[in-house]
Every structure is written in structure tokens, then in C-alpha cells.
Image (cartoon, rainbow, N blue to C red; front, side, top):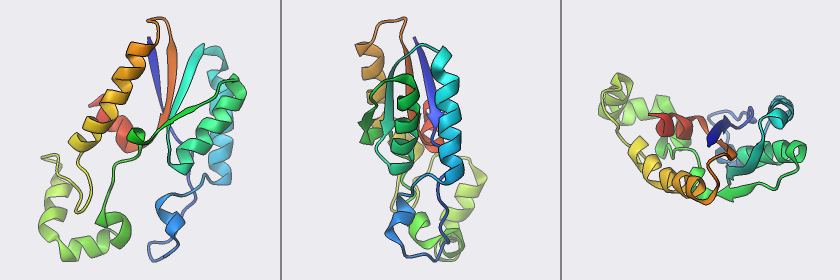
Length: 160
């Protein structure tokens, strides 16, 4: 079995002071849609049996575009969502650095798997994503190829 871990296409960007709630769950950008289209075309020769994706908009939109090329319906799993960066997403790194310098210093050293303030650690992501991956592996024949559209943080955790 081959698992293709696919990061969603480029997302819309919002400024750190933007209070738009969509900032926390952005759409794909125009360029991200082009990336997804190219990905779908590239996967045509890989014998994909099923597509799974995070249920966040940028992953859903990527999976929909890829699915269109492959003639498959994507299945969505909230457990494949990006790591929850908690207060960092809301306040930004500059404010976190001032408010929580100990966390910021430890995080920059990369010596341990610490949770984002009000968010998750890599271990937390592993605990929610790995059962989904194992279920996929269990439910498909050994010669299957599965596409999993998710996020950079999830992919790093799954590969680590």
C-alpha cells in the first residue's frame, strides 16, 4: 500500500490584524487552485483507490479538485486538521514573544514537543491523526494507493 500525503494548495493570506473569522479557515488562493489542478492531473497515473482529506476549507477544496480528475469522491476527517496553534493564530508571534517569552524561547530551540499556548503539540496531532491512518490501512487491500490531503504540520508529525 502506498499513502500519498498531500499538502493542500496555497491558501488565501490574511494580515495578522485582520479580524475576519475566515482567517482561521481560509480558502485556497487562485494559485492554490492551480496547484490542486496540477496535482490531480499528476495523480492520474498513480492508481489512487480513495481520497481522504482534512475538513478544513483549503484541504476540502484541494481534495475536490483532485477528486474531479480521478473520478473519486473524497471522504473528510476532522482528525486530519492542521495542528491547532492556539493563541499564536489569534495574537501572532510578535505578541506571543512579549506575553510568553519562555514558551517562545523553548519553541525556537526545537528541543522538545511543546504545545502551542491554548493549542496542540505534535504528540496531540499524532494521537488524533494516526488512528485515522491506521483505519485506512486496515480497510483497504495491500495493493491500494490512498491520497490523503491534509496540512504541513500533520504531514511532519506523521513522518516523524
